[in-house]
Amino acid sequence: MTMETLPKALEVDEKSPEAKDLLPSQTASSLCISSRSESVWTTTPRSNWEIYRKPIVIMSVGGAILLFGVVITCLAYTLKLGDKSLSILKMVGPAFLSLGLMMLVCGLVWVPIIKKKQKQRQKSNFLRSLKSFFLTR
Image (cartoon, rainbow, N blue to C red; front, side):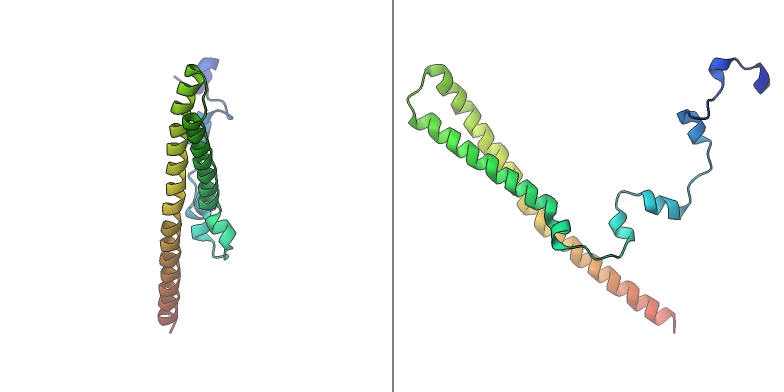
């Protein structure tokens, strides 16, 4: 059976995902450019804001949610409200408390992890420069 006798439904369109699988494979240099962790391949120094932006945002949002949960919980136990609204506040307040605390702790744990990665990256750059120094002589 040749390509001319295949029905139109079975032919592979050039824009279809099947046609993309038939393209030649990417080289290592093109994979490095398209990878998600592009900072591993580039040596440009990043500012502290670029490094710690995500943990700071997570800690800020977590702190705000935690404070909101504290306020809601305090209001639930100090105000004299109806039974229905009181039960809702007593459920929602601790939920915001736990969510905010979880986000705050995640951000706080993330910072030492980033610091450790930075130290490892500095060590590997130092060792790489030592290798190149001794190998070129």
